[in-house]
Image 1 (tube, rainbow over the protein chains, first blue to last red):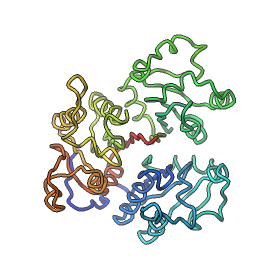
Image 2 (image 1 turned 180 degrees about the horizontal axis):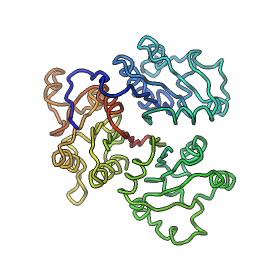
Image 3 (image 1 turned 180 degrees about the vertical axis):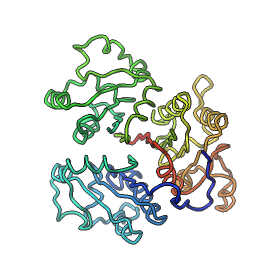
Length: 135
Length: 106
Length: 132
């Protein structure tokens, strides 16, 4: 094992096959930094060519609401960060149906680029991911 | 098999419920930190019954049980409503090795 | 097996960093290797040399430093998360005209690419989170 010391971002190596990395987004935006720092990880992954998927679960589904206007709380717009994901070719975005319904939300309340999955499909997504980053 | 870690008390947080809702047959659940208060989870009989109906294995981190004065629960099966096997830090590492992935619920 | 460990909790405030430390030590005790320790979110506070606890309490920064040095571990603090929280090395302190720096010895400030590289290169990755 060697400890790498990259100054910039490391590229995925050719020596090991590309892994599917799943980022779990389980926090609401604005009340804490975790939602934002998860998306920063996703943007970095996209910029460096890693294969990542995002799964919005539990309180994380609030990130997907339309019409966020955080200017009044002096915070950057979370929706704008989400909007940047496709520009970095991060386009595998999933949300759990029951997390939405528990919160009286449905598909038309959220970002249209996100695929709604049943909990059974989510268990499959966990199983098919090579690495899960639990944020 | 996925190893799920839960570090919040079920009396305070939904993380254990959130975890159980997404665990599949054969997965393992490890209670750590305040998660070990789940050993005597008793405020929601329906949730506990459905958790125990799933083919899951439950573990709890021994240093956290000891720290919190909960050792008596390990000897009292009536009080331990969520039957867990107490494990060491090294056995925690072994569970991670045996799992395909780890999900942390916190 | 090659492990990477992601630490998201601040020392003292939450137990997460303590659990992560014990897990790291147990990983090495079991004969596995640690590919990378990655400090992110409030976990960046673990890298501050300025943590000062009463003498009868365990010194988290010193314990991490000793573990990192003894086992020659690769330890990385996310630079963006660290700078936002006032954890900074001498280079960045000069760049941003700050009067002091506090990043612990043996720990690097680097980008999120190091986290993704760890996810890609490790056999197992585990996150220790703290958010209430």
